Amino acid sequence: MASEEQRLTERLICRRTEPSDLDGYEAVLLDPEVEVRLRAAQAPRMDRKGVAERLAADEAHWAEHGFGPWTLIERESARRLARLGGSEPKLKPPPRRRSAAA
Image (tube, rainbow, N blue to C red; front, side):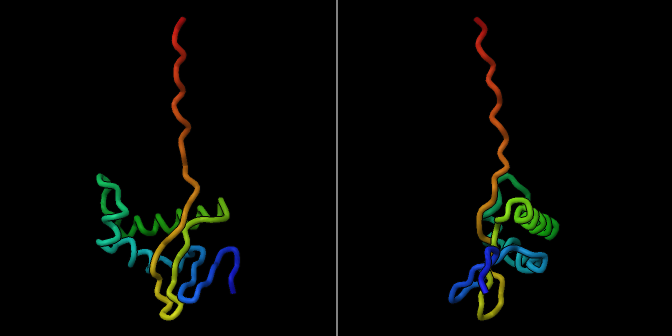
C-alpha cells in the first residue's frame, strides 16, 4: 500500500527513513566505493557514529518538514539498497554589505 511516505514500484519500496534502517545505512554509507563519492575532500571518513547521526538527522528532517531522504528497498529480497532524496537546505543569510561612505 502506497502512502505519502511510501511509494512502490515493480522492484522497489521507497519509503520514509526509520530507526530500523541503521544497518542498511551502515552497509551503504560505510562502503568505501560509496563513501569516497559522498565525502567532501577534506572531511573525515564517516564511521558508525556518523551514520547514526545521519539517520537521526534524516528522521528529524521528515518530522520538521514532512519530507526528506527515502530508503530504497528491493522488494524481492527486502535488502536496503540506498538512501535517496532531497532535503531543505539550511542556508545562512548572505553577509550584509557595508554602504560606501559619502
